[in-house]
Image (cartoon, rainbow, N blue to C red; front, side):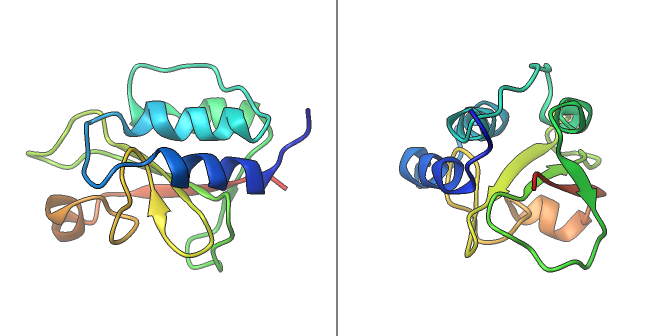
Length: 122
């Protein structure tokens, strides 16, 4: 099966809740699988960069225009969740296990601005 951005983004939109259940990597990984790409699992969201690259995703330069299906891997910040965060852009909004108000999933992330990378599969 080839990569389907539409299937991945539809999956994440329909499965996301209204608040976090600390299952961002699971929900995002399942959406990627619904789009036709199976990732090697990692224990932490912050570590999904390598599996994404092995699956044919490439790092998009910071500041590039976002596209539906883009995946952000966000590193942890001091005092926050040590697992980091993983989220997918649907073309309008960011989703993980919930619909987010921005790429950063909460106020701690928005205040700390930890490092991140955006990955895209063409």
